[in-house]
Length: 107
Image (tube, rainbow, N blue to C red; front, side, top):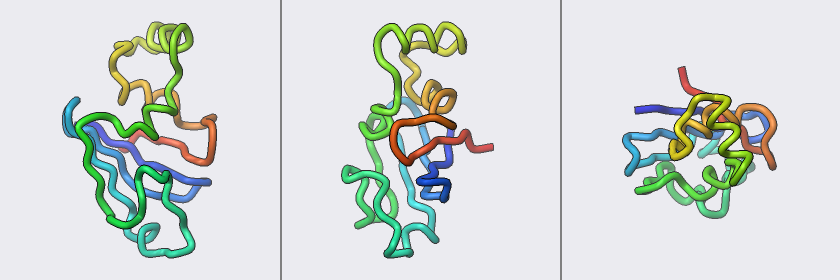
């Protein structure tokens, strides 16, 4: 099991957990979920429920990953299997992402 903390504009929004390669859970942080002024991190992960489950990496997070040659280069340089979406997400989405969301490995 691997986990990451998800931040939106530097504010803790929730936790993303990979139970295995066929089960992912995103759970909004209690404070973030209960604050009506904080928006959902994505329209596909609404705040109408605190925990969301998926048999694959949520498309919102998958779309933070590079594609094609860039993905291959990242996986080679970082020594991460090119098919390991969650591993690449943990390694590459910490600082400079498109949009307001960043991903930090949970320690």
